[in-house]
Image 1 (cartoon, rainbow, N blue to C red):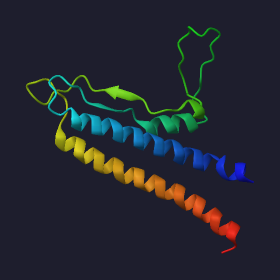
Image 2 (tube, rainbow, N blue to C red):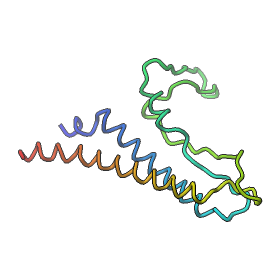
Image 3 (tube, one colour):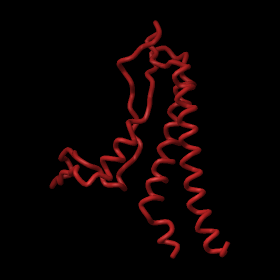
Image 4 (cartoon, rainbow, N blue to C red):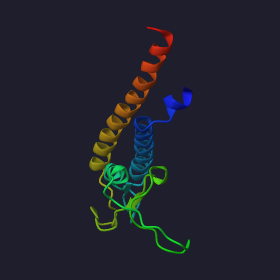
Length: 137
């Protein structure tokens, strides 16, 4: 019964979303810490929601390969889905070639914090409902 509670698609999606939000927070904090570093390029997470939709989509495909040296392309399996770091090389907001805008970073940290809180509340609610069910409340 415990494996049925913890091994379902809804909980797996929530868990991946929490992991992505936590990883993004680390990147955003790192950007803020390097706001005055000349030449520092902003880092962020690739569009996780888009990648999650593609992973869950039945219409996308995954190419099979025969050799480990072949280039992988197509849809990832759900277990392979991880947050990907991207470095924004094109933008520079200041004369020192840094691409960090402190106002943008703080706004993104706020949005990401709300997203993280929503995901963790969903996970908590998921387990709370089962706890109440098991306790007979």
